[in-house]
Length: 243
Ligand SMILES: C[S@@+](CC[C@H](N)C(=O)[O-])C[C@H]1O[C@@H](n2cnc3c(N)ncnc32)[C@H](O)[C@@H]1O
Image (cartoon, rainbow, N blue to C red; front, side, top):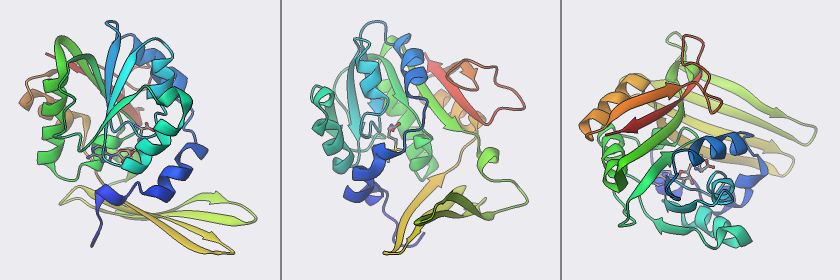
């Protein structure tokens, strides 16, 4: 997508409205992750407004974050319970908190927000650098084929139809680059708003290879936070990596 800059895709407007549409998996994700943060601390890559970090922190876990968007972090720190969360503003493929954790995690398809294979590998390497020797890197993301089918490289999906507003998701996938270019287009009587995003879709197998390059290996994979088996019907996965 010409002129698309990942650093600005979660700007002040997107950040201000981010918490209005909760995904609904927050408590299940926090319960799952808490089991891997037994020594009491965790690092979230792309922590956002603290959607997962805050319910995890209520379980007694000290959660730190790395996040590219200062606007998302401003929303997190505006919440009373978010003020104790330390966040480094930076890229999760390179920024460091200079600490080690039993758990580093990256959720909500955000591994796809890194737009080259090199940067996705660097993200695995950066996770490995932040782990204690027995620590785990947990990644939760969709399966590419759940978003895009081989015979359909572009689509328009109706996200919301209301009396005052319609939201369409307009997308095109390039299998050569593995880039999915999307724009969430919102129509209201006041005008049209565009929210562009580009994702690089990777399969679980590619992620396992990236983990191996980073010196880790796949330990376990589930379909969701409820630990359903990962199988032919899975649309997403929760993958646990370690040394
Ligand atoms: C879909 S939101 C997820 C936020 C949060 N993890 C959650 O589950 O609600 C994606 C987040 O990733 C951040 N992000 C995108 N690319 C990043 C990068 N390279 N390094 C750090 N954060 C990044 C965005 O700014 C945004 O806050």
